[in-house]
Length: 405
Image (tube, rainbow, N blue to C red; front, side, top):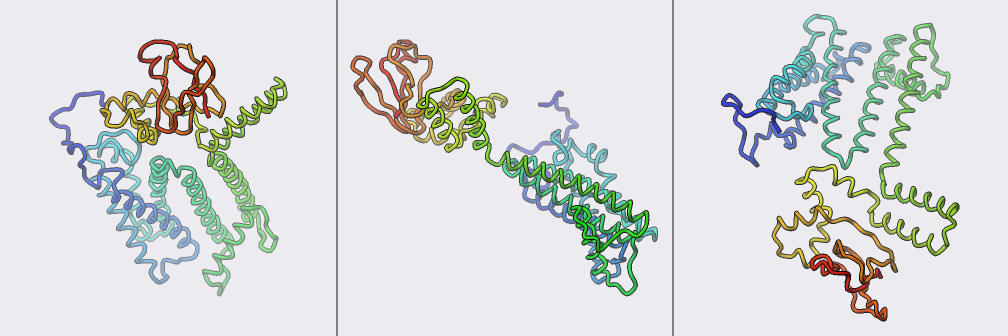
């Protein structure tokens, strides 16, 4: 929410549900343009170091490629100014708060990247300045990761591999700059040899067929091995973290079973009780209920909590007779108070005569209603049914015992 009232000089806002495709963060056009910027920035990051050590600018199509990327970078300045005009969101790069923020944060970066410094000054090494565009590429990738939460782990792994690949290329170019280019040696062969040395050194499995010849090359090799060690350690950590999060329900199941084993050892739980506890956790895991739904929803504002609850419990709402034809506001009010309850066969939901402070909706399974007098079955209820409402609404004790089948 804004901390000030709107004024006459504020830019007009589009009506709800409408908007300019170039100013809406989720627009396909914006996603496409961001992808073009990522490709352009990456291409420049590959081309410039390669040109400095091997002079590939004179090869076929290289000049045209540089012209195209320069044009893209120039257009990006105009697109960015157009996109950010009049916006008021504080959510990061993609939705920066208006044109002034773009001038403060990104205009200088985009302008430096768009100028062909090497061609203008006649000094090719000045083109390194154009690699500042990678800062914007990094920001776009971070935004992708935030927006695509379902694939956040996969995107994180992809971005790490992207960074490692780019660093490998730069190190290979640095090795060429130190070692020089052999006479009559094709540029492609020289680069492949440097890439071979870089990968074997980064992974610390160097075969000894390409070795440093002087102090500068030895120091460069030491630095490369340190970078490789850090990269590999970081990659292993990322892989372990992603693997642990790929199935949170299974992880929760494993933790619960370990606690059960501890309890069985020290509390001497009977085998039948151990089996019931195990079956409960196994069912929760198989039904993918191994997350704390209550804690997750409690951190959300009321309206958002209602929307998420409606989505998560839609299967129950579709089956429940009580919700058919009900007023949407009534459903929204009820659904935020629903709490998951998992029972294994033989578990008693409540006993006759108990106070009733809640009622139950059957999402999946079957319960039997029993008489306390003789323990006989009165009836059974299955998916979509509800029970326990009499004690709740009329404020009387439970009129029967309900047990899970």
